[in-house]
Structure formats: C-alpha cells, structure tokens
Length: 337
Image (cartoon, rainbow, N blue to C red; front, side, top):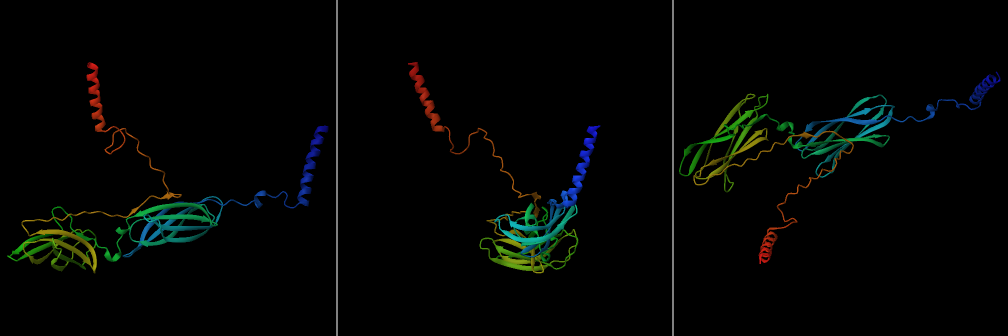
C-alpha cells in the first residue's frame, strides 16, 4: 500500500512540475516542429521537349519546354537557366533564365523558354534548376542537322524527279550542223506535297566540260503541277558542235533556289563525260534527354586477340626466320659428321 502511494505521489509531482514549468517558462511544452525550419521539397527535371519555331535564312528559334517535378514541402525561389552550347566549339551561343517562383503542390510544371541560334551544325541544350541560388538539378539534350530546317520562303514540295527510269534532265538532238547543234531539253519535276504551287521556274545552263564556259542558258516557267503528279518542262538550246557539256538545272521559287540537279550531254564522240553524284540526306536529329552533366563513361578498349599486325610491331621478322633455318641446317650437318 505504501508502494502504490509513493508511485501516485511521484506521478502527481511530475504533473505539478510540468504545470509549473509551463507557467514559468512559456513555450517549454510547445511543439518543437514549429520552431524547427522545414526542409524544402526536391525539384527535378522530368523531361525536355524541343521544337523549331521561326526559321530564317541564318537563324532558327528553338522552343524549349522543360518540365519540372516538385515533391514534398514547398520549394521557394525556384529558377531555370537554359543554354545552347555549340557541340563543335563548346561555346555558349544563347542563354535564357526564367523565374519559376514558389512551388507548393506536388506536381509537374512546364517552363517554356526560347533560344535563337544559327541554322547550322548541332547544339547541346542544357537546363539547370536553382533554388535560392543553389544548383539542385540539371539535364541536357542534343540537336544535330539544323541546316535541314528551311525558312518559309524556301519551302516547296516540288522537286526534280528521282526515278531510275525518268532522269531529272534529258535531251535529244533536234538539229545537227557542222558548227552548231540544237538540243531539245526535258526537265522532270514531281510534286510531293498536297498544294499546287504556280510561282516556279526552271533555269537550264549548258557549260562546256573542259573550260566550264557557259555555252547557252534559258529560263522556263513551270506550269501548275497537281499534288502527287510528275510533269516535264521542255526547252530548246543551241550550242557549238563537237563538245561535251554539263547540264545544270535549277528550280526557283520567287527568287529562291528550291532544288538543283546536273546532267551530261556528250556531243564529242571521241570522249565522254559522266556526272558523279554524291547525295547525302541531312535530317534534324534530337538526342535523348540525359540527367546530370550528361557525361558518359570511358569506352571499353578492345581486348588483344594475339593475332599479328600488319605494321612494323615487335616480334620476329622474315629475315630472322631465314637466319634461324640456315643455322639449324649447319648445326645438323656438323652433328652428322
């Protein structure tokens, strides 16, 4: 009974001391989380989308949409810096900094930015997230082949025909004289789009193959070509006889070169020329999004195969092998004696 009384008295004493401490020391029993600073929630780059905006003859505006993901407690004073770095020189071509503000809800936020760069080569688009001036996350994406983007004034779906059975430029001899030859030229064009342009023209130039001197040229207006159809443009040119010529055909739209092609006209029976065409398709490529600094590891080195190399590397050559055979023969002869 005395033990229970002692425990009860002790409990009462603890309660009394707590009440006295609360009265004498305000805030002694307050929730410690109220005074302790709350750690801000993380903000990361979830994705980056890039599209082409205004395209001119020299520059292109890149529309960069960066998606930021916020989780946890509020994050204050968030900002985003986006840069375009030339992949060849490593120089920063354009920089934009956007203030995002405070992020309180757990969600993704799209932050649009615009970067204007030259319309050539490739760029590394790099994004860095800051919170109160402190860098907390980064990501990057690469672009290549920006020269494939055409300005609005140079866009046309009409091109020179590329079928094997239908060359873009062909000719026939209309009149053959001792000094002059008249050629009937035909240029094949294909409309690969859905519209029917009417402001096109073709220039045909004949250049003497050895001297590159222009022998004759003409310009022909292109009629209306329906979508998906192929049409031929005809013209007649007279040039000196007995020479070989390169035929250069250029497609124009309102003073802008849209497409070009080259053919050959062999009028010299003793020598012929051919057109060496090397076509390279250049397309706009967008690399995958990478987190952090985007730096990859070292490439694995190929393992040694033990096979001899074709260079002057270490090892026995042919001369050493011959000396070894002769020495072995002499040794065997001496041994037999």
